[in-house]
Length: 311
Image (cartoon, rainbow, N blue to C red):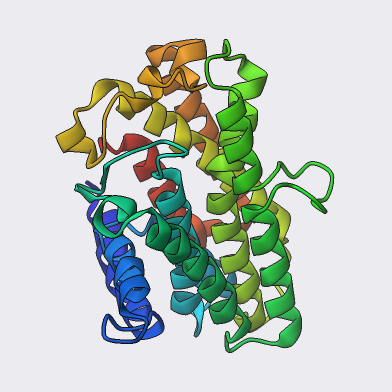
């Protein structure tokens, strides 16, 4: 792995975990069961890619070379929403998975009722954290708006922005056991996975704009274009890994997509073309960041890592 990427990932995990430790209720806070469940899933060893992308976007847009104040908390809030989605994804009513990040899923460890409530609580806490960011009110409102759209069903989204994470999940469920089409797979991937990755980058950029020493010409649109391309590439690689890696390598049950007749990129295009498509999308993502010059190098390196990873 590129040493620069390794350093970004290592420091990003440290910053995110410190923020999560500070923001999440302790295991001894009542009611104990739900707070233990929230922490079980949040601290199950995730790579923290979304908060790291958020912090690096904030750093890039701020243009100071430093991660702006509040960016780690914003990244932690995004990780809470991501963890909530995983808890609910793993439930028997959805993907019915017993393993997540190499550990028992939340409902296996704490029961379905507590798992559902733990996911709900993490989502609510994410909004609470964002509302308390040390940023101008207009910036907080803009972040909350983009974040809410990204995890919703697409209601109220501007033209051209795909349905959010929940909308993508619904389409994914309803498409099971149907022949996947290119249009269907892209719709699911851009919503179910891509929307949260995109908002990680857009929201980080919005926070960075509040701390930029001078008004910077690039707008949030470049960040959105980058996020949409990188997010789709990320999910394509996930699809490939699900078909080519073992459960031990993935830290979750391998082959679930095939077994459930999920609409995946390789199911439509095959593995080799899927790899080419992921590489092409990362090239598009790089092009979107050209207005940011050299300050975009760390974010580009992270995007390349997304398609080069093996788990």
